Amino acid sequence: MDAVFLHSCVTETPRLFRNIGPYQLAWYLRQHGYSAQVIDFIHLMDRDQLMAAIRKFVTPETKILGWSFMGFLHISFWWYKQVIDEILPEIKKEFPNLKIITGGPGAYDTCRVERNKKVFDYFFFGHAEDTMLAMMNNLYRGGPIVPFEIVHGNKIIRENTVLPVSNSKKFDICTCNHRWADQDCIQPKESLPIEISRGCIFKCKFCRYPYIGKVKNDFTRNMEEIGSEMQYNFDKWGVQHYYMLEDTFNDRNDKLQAFSDMIKQLPFKIGYSCYLRPDLLWSNPHQPQLLEETGLIGAFLGIESFGEESSQIIGKGWSSKHGKTYMLELLNTIWQRRVPFKASMIVGIPPDTKEFLLESNQWLVDNQIMDWTWHALSVNRDTKGPWVSDFDRNADKYGFEWINKNGHTIWKTAYMDWLEALDLKDQMNEVGKQYRTVDCWNVLERGSVGYDPFKDRYTLLKNIDHKESAERRNIFLKNYLKDLMNL
Image (cartoon, rainbow, N blue to C red; front, side, top):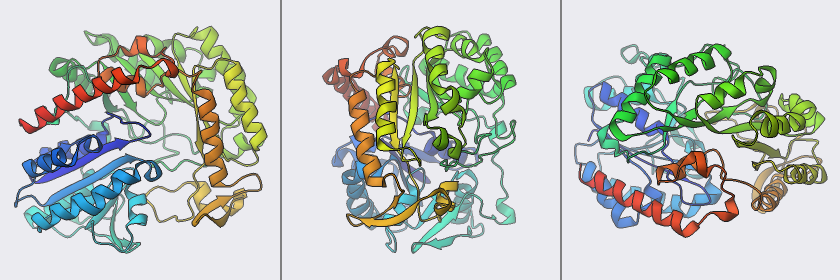
């Protein structure tokens, strides 16, 4: 193989999510005459399995070995260190001509932790279709060197770097005709991610994602192409369930209508989960029914805070004015509890106090909201990363200062610090476990191992048979590995 990509999704529990990033890169490279292979779920493999898979595809002629993960280092550090300190150096020693690279959601955290070290030759920040192709052209076809900069002692290639003329940008999400390949080893009826568009029309102060504040029709794929991909996946593997990869799925009524028209033309039904703006559901009363009719299994609603000042600060003043009443109306009246949603809440936005947040959590319990989760607010003092929020850039303006606590530099406000926010987040999530249902993302992952997402979405977390779930995951992984090694 010309390029091999290692990937996995690491959370508090073993996951079988596929991140579309490495598969998109592999597909894109194949379109330009290169061979590429993704080895997924590597955090669930033992060392012998992983090394055998790598050695199957990496040869003396291979010039790129990529590694990425989705998750948080404080959760996955044990696994992360094994890959960084043991696996990659061993492969590099065996194949000294390899360029070892990393990218994806965890690339910047890795850059900071691995500062001034030589495990990785390059770090790719942001979407990498254009920059990866330019790198391959340089290594295999004598093309120009890809421009890079030094951050924390590491070579960084940013998404928006100015590429040489011969490597002018070619990738266009609007016309992307991505296809999963036989060598991706998709399992029968597996739930898959599908990219609808990139970016968001809103500009929340805590958000680090790229293309925020975009024009409404920017970076959206052709709807016929999306339908064609869905038909292809159904014909090949019986796929009907999707993670919709778009920051705000309901940002445009014309897009939702076009999506509905496309879905009606398919000879099978789909199911999906997606990110929705509750204020747009509220201001466009036809949207909830349209979404349900097109196969909505579950939704992620960014409520964030019920506080008047805090919701105004982040750019979601609607949440304090209408969030509670509309959540109840949506759940109990409009969807009549047929469609669960996950309410996303944030701990640490000033001036929310611990007492106010505990009251908010109790409201979610008392009103039988089907699913919610609390996240600790992330504010980064270091703004050299690929994606930076307004909170990161202007922390002092919003009341954040920096302190050293337990050997870590963390944010602090007049109301709490980051470590206190983490503790409170864990405390409130623990309280909610006995009331919450399987969330909108995990229900799709469970669909990959044989559960029916439309029925499973009503399952309470406390009623999950974890032994049975683990057995099903093991069967999935065994079949995936068998298919991979038989390529």
